[in-house]
Length: 165
Image (cartoon, rainbow, N blue to C red):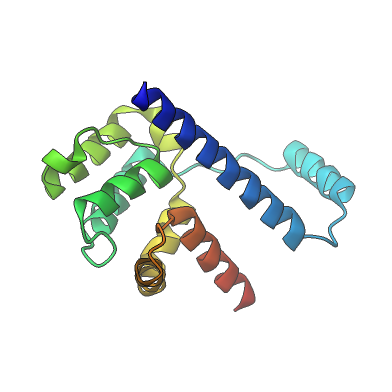
């Protein structure tokens, strides 16, 4: 029964985070004419060839470099949290596994599952790689304030920061 409650609470928390993110996005684009955006997207859809999505091999190339970074992932818990929140890969019994075993699980899951690979954004991974210091700063701020560090929040801050530069 506890597992069901935790699962329900996780679903509620993810839904709340999604709605907060959607509200943040809509609020940040107050002056946008959405009818015009839809028209432009429709025109683009008709005239633009589909760009190649990053391949599984591309992801397999960047993941080890990212996941072995001990400044971002100081513990197995932080690695498991990232895997679950950003990559959509839940690592069972992460607390009983070695760091390298966890990384292997992630890479093998991406390699074996085109659906998982398709859900991973190379844009997000690149932003994380390019902004390690800022992410580490957000992690430390969360620790000081006794708040849970959320990867989505950190990524939003980085994307916002890039917009203003």
